[in-house]
Amino acid sequence: MNLKAYQDSLQALIRNTGRYGCEDVVPVDFVSLMDMYEDNFIKLKKLIPHIERIEGSCVSKAQGHLDLHLIIIERSRYTTTFTLSYCFNDDEHLRMEPNLKIRIYHDAGLAEVMSGKLHHGRLVLDNLPADALKQKWQLNRFLAKWLKYSLRQQHGFDVHPLTTCAPPTEIVD
Image 1 (spheres, rainbow, N blue to C red):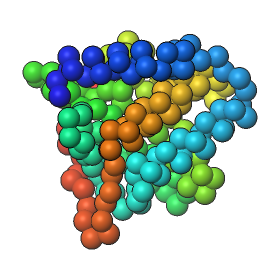
Image 2: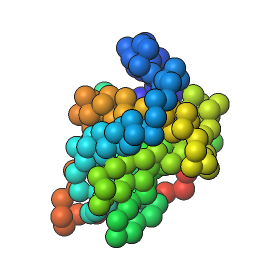
Image 3: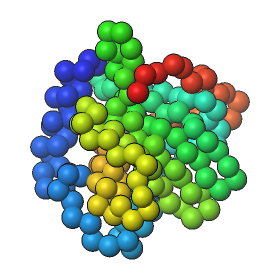
């Protein structure tokens, strides 16, 4: 799928979500944000059931849809940090978008978007302070909608115990 098809697909997603998109979400409170983190964790476990087996990067392919790219950034005993994105080839380089940096807290059963790039790079939410409630709501609401959309497209990172994914490649942000 090319960039134009992706843009059309994204516009359809925005139209279909109507008032439930990420831009117009008014943050309620921290407790509700934590509920969203829990919901995102559950959806991510469906999309990536064995994230502990992924080394480097993986690509999910769903016929007729954009490939979904996952790159492991950091792993510790209780957390895994990774990016989830589509990848576009813009003549001279590869471009990742929406390029969400996500941290899973395995022990707590939560998943939080740490940063992201939306709307063709026009909305870059990076290095958010801990009290940036509105921006965290936007990013995590977007993730919730995107995970639901990706699961409906039959995306999934099903890694067998004896296989590993390819190492990360050079990608321009």
